[in-house]
Length: 335
Image 1: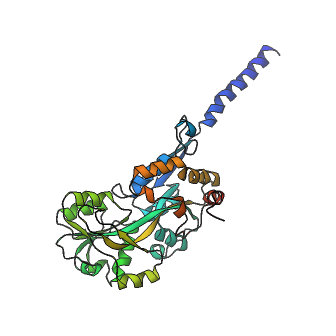
Image 2: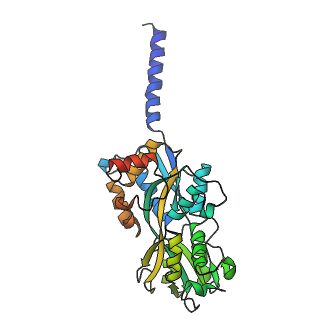
Image 3: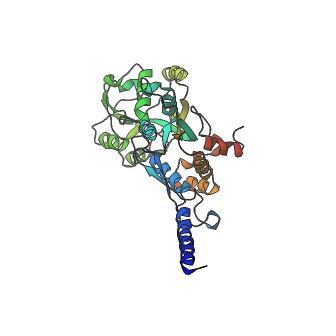
């Protein structure tokens, strides 16, 4: 081999040697749309982002390192909640996001809050996560013992784009009320909590897993709050129409000094688009249900213990992503 040819071959080999590690170190980014920082979506999103991430250079899973998807960097992104997350997935601004089961169903079918808007036929389920309880928080002494007592009161229904706003309107409707029958405001839970503590608000709605940070802080501050029951014949009749609601109970002392209350819940679901690669979503789902993730969930948030493989398919009102479906079939959770 002459010198020129030898150097050329050496050059090609050198490029290959450099290129191989570069390819192996390819980074994939995966955003998870969550909710406001004072709610439950955001911290749960952080836990799951940590669980499924496995950046280049991480220690191997069996050596105490990350058990996530090789090369994946996932991030939890604060947002306005369910509706905003679905819109972001449709627009390509998020690879995935959290949504209430009712909102996901409405988006997929073009009904409810998505009435008159384009359907989202490409919306797909990764997993059902945990029940989200409807909290109706009232200021003590405001004279609010039931939803019917909200008439004429200063009430925050949560911000536009949130699933809470949708459900708050359904609950009001069960008692013949609309936004116009209350002095409606549209605030994030932490902002609503501040106003309620200052006496500038009588009540606010929040849908999320308990304990919710904003409400826990409010109760701990000694502001004087109570949870209003969302139950009774009006609610029973409403549930016959909106079957995605389930009866729920928030136990006593979940929030300091607050008694047990009957309410409703919807499922918190992790959704994505059918445009996401099937192998990627398979690996994400596999990482979600890894034994190491179980430890993270159990120790990372009070609601983490409610996220189980056994309820991963509960209340699925939209189709599974093919990658997730493959995992559940392999795991024996789906035929």
